[in-house]
Image (tube, rainbow, N blue to C red; front, side, top):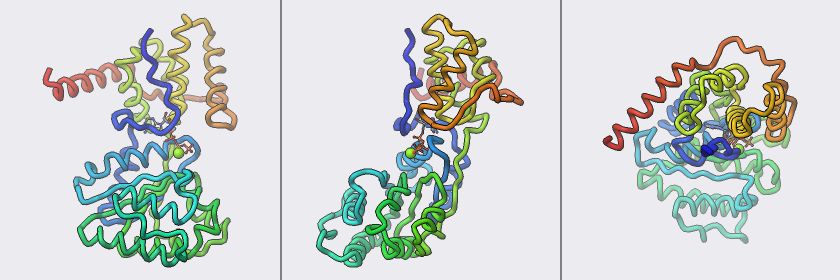
Length: 306
Ligand SMILES: Nc1ncnc2c1ncn2[C@@H]1O[C@H](COP(=O)(O)OP(=O)(O)OP(=O)(O)O)[C@@H](O)[C@H]1O
Ligand SMILES: [Mg+2]
C-alpha cells in the first residue's frame, strides 16, 4: 500500500510541504524590509498558522538578511496567558535574560524592562519580528492585556524596535472594538487577507504529492472536477481519494463525495454541499501535472547531483 501523505490537519511544519501563498508572503516580506507590521486575517483552517510558521522558518532567507530574528508564539498557549509569561516567552525565544520580568513588578515596570532588553538587541543591529499566532487569544484576558500593554507595543513598533505579524480570524480592530480597547496599536497593521488557494496553488499541491500518491489520469480528472480550493479541503479530498482507492473504489462517486463532505464538516464546521459546486474551469491539466512533476524531479536531481 502507498504511503498516505494527506493526513496532516494542523500547522504545516515541514517547509517543503508548504504550498503557494506567494502574494501573501511577498506582501509581508516587503513590509518587514522597513519593519512595518502586518496582520494575517482569514477564516478558520485557511492556513494562517502554516503561513506564520513558514515565515518564521524562512523569513531570513526571503529577506536575504541574517539580522532579522523571527519568533513564533501561539497566544492561546499556556505560556502566553499573562503579560509576565508572554514577555518572558518572547525574551526566552530570543535567548535573552527573562529574570528582568518579575511577577511583583507593576505592568509598566515590566514593559520598560522588556523594552530595555530589546533595545540592547536593536543596538547590535538585530531586527526582531514577532509572529504572533491566534492573536485573538490575547483579548480573552483583558485585565492582563490592556490599552497600556498595547500602547507600549505600538511605541516599540513605531520606533522600529519590533515588527509584529499577527494571525487572527477577524481584523484586530473588530476585537478591539468589542473589548472597548482604544489603543492606536490596532491601526498600525497592514492587512494580508488569506483566502482559498489560487488554481496554480492547487496544481502545485497535487504536483508536489504526485510522486507519492501516483494519481491516475482518471483520479486527477475526479480531483479537478470536485476539489474545492480551500487548503484543508484539498488535503482532505486527496486523503479520501486514497482511502477510496484502498477499498478498491467500493463507494459510488456520490458516496465518496458525501463521505468527503462529512469530513469537511468535522474539521471546518458549517455546511458543505458538493452538489452546489459549479466548476467553471479545471484547476490543472492532467498533462500539466506530468510536466510539473518532471520539473520537480529535474530540480531534485540537480540538487542531489544525479
Ligand atoms: N500553504 C499550505 N500548504 C499546504 N497545506 C496547507 C497550507 N495552508 C494550509 N494547509 C492545510 O490546511 C490545514 C489547516 O491549516 P492551518 O492550521 O495553518 O490553518 P489556520 O488558519 O491556522 O487554522 P485555525 O483557524 O484553526 O487556526 C493544514 O493542516 C494543511 O493541511
Ligand atoms: Mg491556526
